[in-house]
Amino acid sequence: MTWNIPLFKMYWDQDDLTAVTNTLSSGMNWAVGPEVSQFEQELSEYIGTKYCLTFNSGTSALHAALLAYDIGKGDEVIVPSFTFIATANSSLFVGARPVFADIEEQTLGLNPEDVLEKITHQTKAIIPIHYGGCPCMIRELREIADDHNLILIEDAAEAFGASINGEKVGTFGDSAMLSFCQNKIITTGDGGAMVTNSRDLYEKMKLIRSHGRLETADYFSSCDTMDYVTLGYNFRLSNIAASLGRAQLRKVEAVIKMRKEIALQYMKQFKDLQKTVIPLTAPDNYSHVYQLFSARVQERNQLMAYLTKKGIMSKVYFSPVHHTYYYRDVLQYTSSLQVTEKISDEIISLPLYPGMPEEDVRYVGSAIHEFYESNGTLNG
Ligand SMILES: Cc1ncc(COP(=O)(O)O)c(C=O)c1O
Image 1 (cartoon, rainbow, N blue to C red):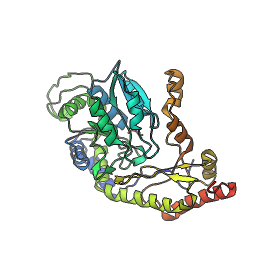
Image 2 (tube, protein in one colour; image 1 turned 90 degrees about the horizontal axis):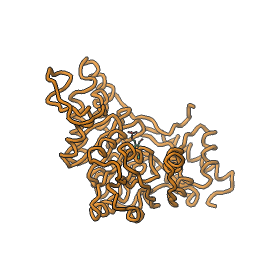
Image 3 (tube, rainbow, N blue to C red; image 1 turned 120 degrees about the vertical axis):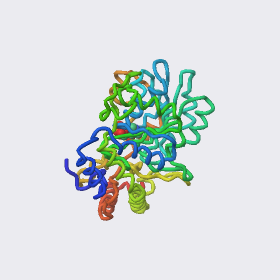
Image 4 (cartoon, rainbow, N blue to C red; image 1 turned 30 degrees about the vertical axis):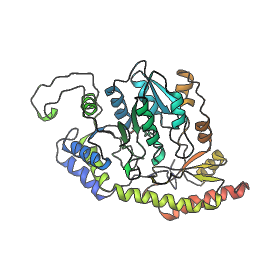
């Protein structure tokens, strides 16, 4: 379907085109090359960690991290169900069991109290997400992880550039995953990364990323025969994608500023719908980067149908993972997560992207007003 107003659009400029064209026209290093290591260095500088390793998706980044931490059979990993399924699946990839904890209502991230309830002697790690660009209660989760000797891996797929008191998301965990899929804050089409201060983790993930190969030099331009010392995958980000990532990173602050401005415009429009449309707002000192503009609304499904009629795309981020066919019927999860289930019934994500014209934001706002006015539920 073509939408009058899509949910998201990529933000790109001449710098992106030049960067990719330069890599292509060099006629070399399309898979592996110097853009990758430069992108990694720039990412670690931006986030504020010692190491960064790129991957061909956020999902493969998480997969590699769990393997590198030696998480596997018999281990439990506490995750939200209010997330994209890859957060939970990463545990299944390595034979561990994802254990769902509930979320709290302010940031819609993992509820530290429920995480405490879910810890058993098998728990090895916690993987919280920063929902839609809003940092979760990560400092509280850090304390819990420290007290219980657990690994804390931030799933920061949606929150590139978000921070608490100026400290970037991605620096609170023992490691953090970033995603560069097309709907994220910066994008390489598909792509991801892990950031960490642990040299050991970095070295292990590096082997896993590329076939378990001990690389003494660039594999493709070296005559050396290299040894394979562990089981590995091809999880590499291409050099072409990395050149795009570097160009995207150069404008990330402007992109975040635009996202925040559009979120503010929405907030203003919803001021008179206080009990009907409740946008997610970050706590003080939290910098929310609005990868999503999400709100809790009344009559969510009818509203979505109305917006669709107007050519406005909206989406439910997220339906609970434990309600999917795979988790419920195949894996037989019977979790009951009150807040997750309630929020999933009320949440809607509205169009937001850098460069979205103010008149389009107004069009979405007016359509929502029209819907509630015609239903007589304004502030009901
Ligand atoms: C919270 C969350 N975790 C994991 C992922 C997976 O990232 P990717 O699509 O880069 O594999 C995404 C993005 O789709 C996400 O939003």
